[in-house]
Length: 61
Image (tube, rainbow, N blue to C red; front, side, top):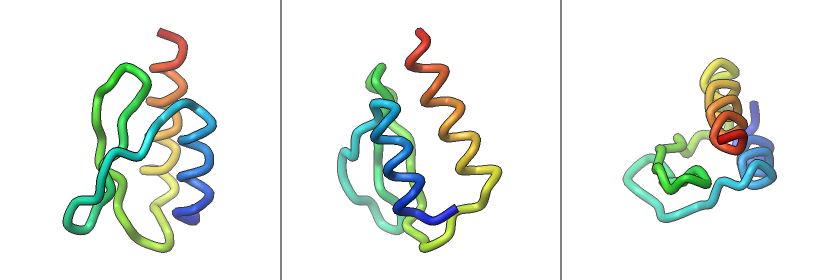
């Protein structure tokens, strides 16, 4: 999955960009828990789907 598409999906689910790290961006779920997002043009599909599912789960409570 393209990085920009994943970022758009995460924003739509309520995740926010926090800061940039070495080779990663640091994002947070709505509950305030941080997670790293690799800064590559293409993100592995399994990793992207996992991040999206965690964001959806966080929204549900």
